[in-house]
Image (cartoon, rainbow, N blue to C red; front, top):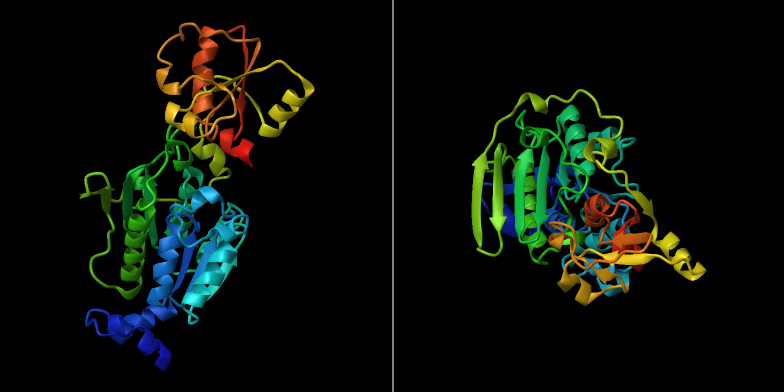
Length: 359
């Protein structure tokens, strides 16, 4: 039953005949697990909290970074360096004291996925990497839990609901993970700040519909949004044999990231710093785009990956070369290309790229 304060708080929802008190009580009794408290997670958490979802779990192991603030508007400069899950739970509990928050600092892992997902009625995926997406999907498929999915890329977003009443799953759309570095994340390509707000709000809407059994749930329907043209489109897809998942795979990192064709040596940002301090003569190449380089660089010679369509004219390399990008993926691609033209050079990829160096 709703308390008097809740009736006042949710008045504008309660007077909707399609939702009413019965729907509001379903929201109060519901338990939703939010995977990630980042760009997508912030608006999902804020709107599900405001809507009166009774129990919300937050699975995130990350801390607030200054580069998060342009799109993760639940956080402020004072929160930088703090755990996102803790900051989010504290602020959201002030937004709605009738909601219980469960913090899962360890995030979702292969060790805890099934136990974690089992505790909740609906899972919302706000992750930004393929290993996590496949792990979350498979856990939900095994336990038959609805999964509200969202993803963002530069100016484009996607929303759908997987595994709803035996409907299609993530593997029906994407049976196999992409190879390592094939699909860059927003740390490398960038993202317009309002986009996760739009997509996350749509995810919250689908979660509310699933819980309250309201309207037509986007099961078997992928919604596509383009912020540059302000256009929506969608297409339907069906359940396939790939939806049948019997057990979790032993290693989702390996499953989602195929080994690179060329053997590439890697060093950490700390190791590179130690090399510089020791006087080791090593050349640094920055394979990001010119606009990224102009914003911030650490003195490397600019050689954009987009220009590596053949042997670079006029490029002189030392015996040892460290290559970096923003997060470590594009630099691997660049090394694979450069090794074919300069077999005598020893190349090293800086793990984590400029982001790791800044940390």
